[in-house]
Length: 182
Image (cartoon, rainbow, N blue to C red; front, side, top):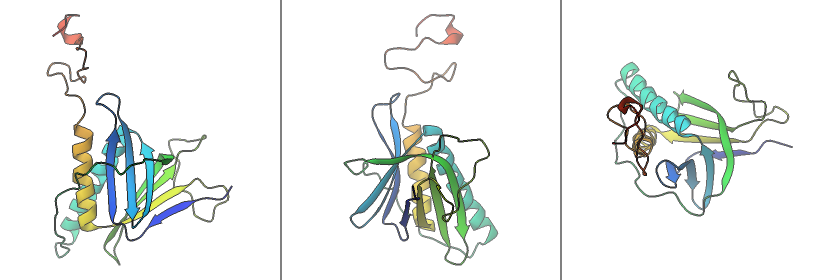
């Protein structure tokens, strides 16, 4: 089976969002250009890490080259576009900065059955390579993505002030309270 590469250069909308109630949410990333849209599923920790790394990359770019400027805009607060058809689950994530075009390149590769800790992004020419979502973002789009992702990730259940474990809707049995409900 040949690899499918969903490429967006340029992209009109690139967002992280969720479906479901806090404590039982599914995380997705959507890329859209015109009428074409791709949705991929990922874990909360992957979404958080990607958002944090994009934000850190932007800070490093600004520190290394103060002449690079972009206009900050409000993060996209619209919900995910419906219907959501998950093309694949994300396994390996690649992030790079293309200096010639001043674009951030995000590559999200499909999880494979033989996923290992040291797996890398497969080359496009590689036989049997997993599917890939490749998105080129302007610096302003990358900044908006990082800020929205931070908001989406933090919008879950509130942490217990004593133990830090997320408080369940039906109550919370805090380990620091010796078994008593608060």
